[in-house]
Length: 255
Length: 197
Figure (cartoon, each protein chain N blue to C red):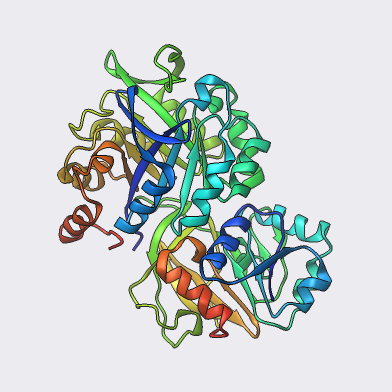
């Protein structure tokens, strides 16, 4: 049986891993390669690297560190941030990344999802959605890497998730912005809504604070993977302990 | 010398890096003469079957790959191309192993692409799995899959069963990515390089 995935997320700025609260106030947490190796050794199932400045600055990801990561990792990893063309995606995938994740550029140009899926296959095209709860519904935000540039979009989250899948996304990562960095648990209500309209894998992001939150997001949210950053970077949750507990709870997990 | 067929696909770098970690030198090449002369050949590939075949055709590698007599390992799309045809774009493929590659059906609780770590089922001794625990997990990421048939050495289940390791003569293939499957995947690559197929 397919295992649910535990996915540490490393936000990258200027070649270092950083973490902020609610997408703001970033502090440096460590070196990319060191952290990548640490998470691999601890049993992470996959890693996501978000170049958080690339998209809002109109820059693309530097492929230099992508190749350095690909050399040391023997687990899959996904690169996100500022990928806005076939050429940019090709560079990262040829650099050794397994998947690319697009967020703001997909909103600017939804056809990009289809172009990438046609060229590389849906299985390596992830669409990241930054979603905020407002007035009883969920809406997609753009350029969230920089609070001064963050914008509303015309999309309801559920509609954009459906559209992204239709255009060829092979996976959706739903970043629930209200929960991000708060460690109060994943947004199960929202995740269940999005899960119900997708047939591709869904990865939950934003809100992990305890082992019970992971249990709930797999059992109740029905997601394929759970992404988290600060609890792993700060050592609040150790991946081996987390995995042992989830296995004890009869959740399908790679030991 | 181990040749990695430069099919222009996306996971070529990761296969080469995985071999590097094992201390194995490989050469990435699209030169039929170099490929034919290699001791072993890996046919990697990520992307659609149509694009994969187009790239092999454009580089004049279709007959070269079909005619190889040394051990060959197809990885992911590289394995699927060993079969007769793929429903992905309704394209004829290399036709080395009988069977047609088809889309994995999704259903509640079964998401497609099949993405993540899964276990294998095998009813016999498999050289490529030598020294690997029977409950080891491998990393899969694919939407299309090959049928379980007489050439299946190990299968995997995601809603329906499908071929995870295949072999016919000197041609082997794995649907999962050994280069991204931790210690188990590294051991599989080592088995291939050391002739345990």
